[in-house]
Length: 633
Image (cartoon, rainbow, N blue to C red; front, side):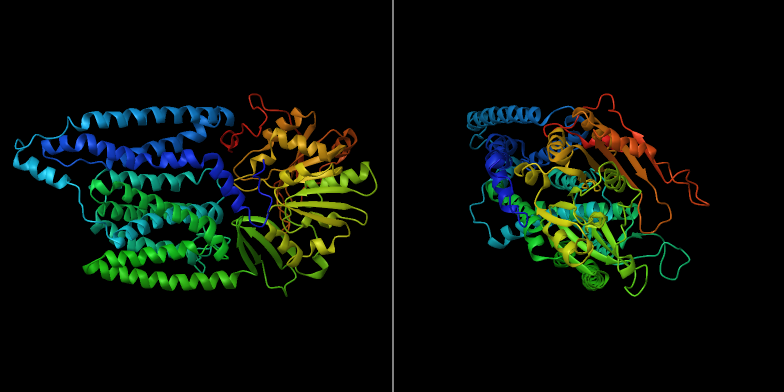
């Protein structure tokens, strides 16, 4: 508990320290397995292979280890996580680690025992066997520094491509749960193919293909098309909010990642050293992967205000392809370098011109975009994290205080705030987990108290300086930076009339905010007759049974309120679950007759309310056991 991050601006230090102390040593030990076991393999079997007249292929062991890694990756979400708690998984991992230690000791003993028996007898080998044995002789010449640097560069570029493609498709294309599995599986497949043997990677085929793919991927970051095929502006709906459409983006980036990682890992294997240098080779491969991770996870958020590491990596690979190429492929690769450089410059210019503001930190990249020129009456500024909207506000003075997006008066949270005023008149105390642009503070009246918990300091900065909801609110608004649950654990009881939890719209929801331990914490901070409102609008996850089970677990009633404003451009369809023990408030909700449908609308009612009951077979989520896989839509 002492290592929990307390600095909202930069929690990286505490997180790395926590990881180092808890799993650093066993993971470091596991990372040495590849070169260690392959060195023992050479010691035991190299001489036998020499007798048979063939070199020993120790690198296939590395391919096999990646096959196992990919199998575990694919099996974990559907087969392990749904059926085992975190504690059970920890014990299982520990048992597996113990088995690993026993097998490692046994393998080492076998290599020592049989090494002498496997040595060839002098003068008995055939010429082919002698040639093979000479091939296997340890190369006593020291490794060149440039050769080791190239190993590191190729491994780092592969790692950077994995991370940048994953970030792009999961944040800038679509927030689909488990979409990250696809690029990681492709990355591991390229390791498997390249280290399995020399037949999978062919330079004469992959070099021109890589030259083409770097330009296509850079173009995917840059160009936009209009949805109207007959439009003069373009050819089909390839982009949504300025990003390539999902149906085209995922295949493009998946194929591109596969081709470019095959290039990096294929060239890496083509430059593999003699078995004597296995340890140094794998050290450079592992170090390259770590460098790529550190560049994308730590350095890039500190150095860049946008995801510039992706186009930079594409430029470097295009240049590397040109350096490796000859003949007509060299011409193609140089053309690819020129195309990438041009497209990169266009991309930079587009990003700069298309945004009101843009910033990046540990938590990701935030953008403020305008829906129209400020001079137009319907102009709004919208805050985006990837493709997720975190709120918007009109620019015109007469509309500036209008509540927008998911928070209108007919939404679940709107009903909660207004309904609690009806059943308990007077000043309100409202808690908000997730600030956005501060839209909900527009409900504030003189005498009301609003406490806003926000994880990302940049969100608070934008809400205070780029949007005006916080400034315009008549209520007293107090921000609290940091993870809401950690902050609330340290606070005295707040006595909220309404507590809104608005953090579940993306694919990687903060599960620790929707567990049994979390709702018990919320119940402690909410008045006995208060309301806890969960915003569960999500395209891919159905969170209503999870919230219903949590409500039943603490003895509360749960009501799902879905509001569909239809053609109102500034209001979005919203899905809220209201959890309370307040019978008067629930009765007030029941009295709210559905408003009539708009003329010409196919909808019967613009909103509906459903009492929720726990789903049979679904246990309440806890910090120790939860599973997104079982609530996929």
